[in-house]
Image 1 (cartoon, rainbow over the protein chains, first blue to last red):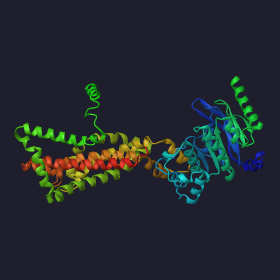
Image 2 (image 1 turned 30 degrees about the horizontal axis):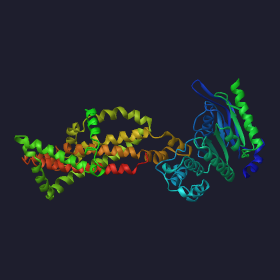
Image 3 (image 1 turned 180 degrees about the vertical axis):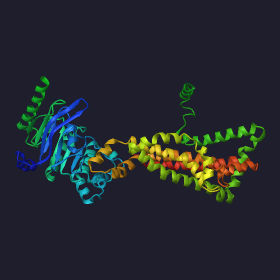
Image 4 (image 1 turned 180 degrees about the horizontal axis):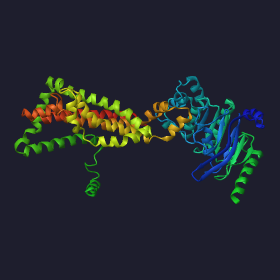
Length: 258
Length: 267
């Protein structure tokens, strides 16, 4: 809840930009994923990229992360052009992709290790507590449920202390209740850490609930159709929430009706 | 044939073929008894030289060998030293080479034809080269022959393991700031340990099989040498006796590696 209040500072257009994409074009051969796309991710906000499957939202996230290269245009982070992945832009993938030979603790500490530093044991403990897995520190990934594995994956990314968190439908494979639980945990965590994040989803409700802003993407090639300002962590039963959901739904229906 | 067996098995499902769990544990011993039986029958009914290889005489010779210190100090020890040397060399060369070939496309393209070519040459074909290159009577020539067979399973299994490694593990490591060096150390190597162990098991099989021919020439110690020498001394019963020792050691080695494989059971 507190996060929504903190956010008011950066919600006007004067907020600083964490990551920006300029004239971003991505093509695979003749297939155009999007053309001349512009997006600013403002400091401290949670921006949701919402769209149907195949609209290029994951591709856009990978471009922001530096995991893929743009055909034209560029992504800029801290004033520098993004050329490759960087731990300061932490990615949480759709599947947890934990390392099965490592314990939960070993997975969380993996980031610093792979950068050639020793994992800070206190920080790892702290993160495990934050994601509610302090009792599973010695468990192996195979013993975890889907929700627990995704919590480990999130903690692993946070262990690197990234400046921005890029999340690719991290909750899409989870059951509805676990998903809602994790959404609330994420909101709490983001507030506590005061982080900037981009969250890819195809779930309108998830986008409206999590996002401070929602970038609505169209069919493949269309790019971002519109940005919608949302309240961020608004009660799911409120009128405002239902209205935002309805607004986005209508947009999609109109597009399909063309 | 298979149908017939299956039918028979079904019709006697409450018979002794579908044995109780306790009885199933005894089956390997029944198998050993059957093998010994076939051995006995073959030598019993044969005339001429084959009769010299009868199991009852082989076991007498085996007891003699096992109670004879010289057999260990002269032959078993030499064979084990060569085996250990060849295994160490195969590991030291095979594993890094496998990682190189599996991880870097350039290394793979550079080496694949040569390696597949060399692999198909029987290691025994290297004998003249080995005997001319290395000092006679030492360990180097047999170690080289064994190595030429034992290195490939380690190279190919490691490389294949890397090729089939989950790409996402590397993608995650990339996004977390990994470098080529740390990715190899923290993701690739732990990720392919199961394949390395498979390679190790095959390699040990090769090395152990090659040990005997590798000791046929140019040495005067080792179990391979002992077999040929026994023939020249007309001590025929010693030949199957040494074979039993070779089989036992080989079986134990293989069992050990299989146990090791079980400890990496996450895959």
